Length: 298
Image 1: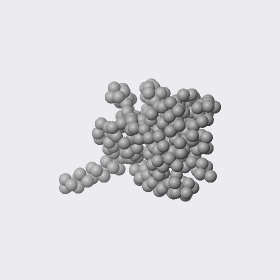
Image 2 (image 1 turned 120 degrees about the horizontal axis):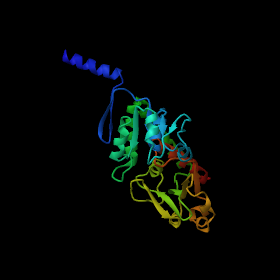
Image 3 (image 1 turned 60 degrees about the horizontal axis):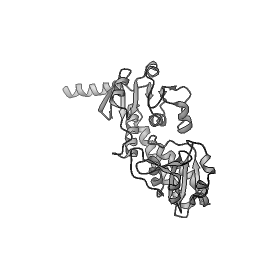
Image 4 (image 1 turned 60 degrees about the vertical axis):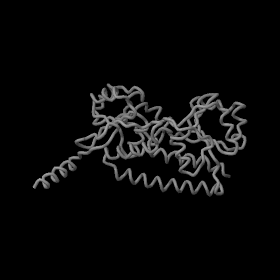
């Protein structure tokens, strides 16, 4: 009798949409599937949009459309202020069922919890694998939004497409894809070079490409270097992710024009893709790198 009552309770809870997910603090329980979701950074915005969920609020939407671009941010989403300092009044006015944050200090989480339940993840750290962490976050958000099957299917499809992209590039380069460095232009004198623990380098590895300028693992997986550091890429390719922080002025300098990769016609740019994004941004980077490198094989 007790077992039957317990089973009935579980069935009723499931029918009502009760669920438990895991964030950095441990299990978080919800009586029903949240519908009104506010996200507080762009990676989280990517994650929910990839799952087909439109948040009611997200930060810095104009910049998102410039720097992240994909997945597209729908027009009806409200801007909740800065990623580093969200506007609590705007968030409260949206009457969210849940606020999803990452890497937020405890005092910020406490303030947000006065508005709505908070789910907070540790996304970026030198002490863990950022890409593996992003996969875990993706699956937890999928559970929160009742889209676990969707997420698992997307991951399976991504793995298949990554293998296809790798095969196509290998064939285009006759079985030997050139080593490649991925950068962002910072200003007229410096660049950001992606290294270990970054999504761009994970995308290179998924494509079977050696990183031409390895950098040690760090929280963000990126290192700021002077432009002349790019001269170390003597027989490989350079890929720059747009947009550039200081425009295209660097391209007109003698220092840039005399870089080996530039002189050899082995430099390419990609359309915007967010290098600090969610798990599916791994695939977006791989697609962008494939499209950038393919013309260099001709």
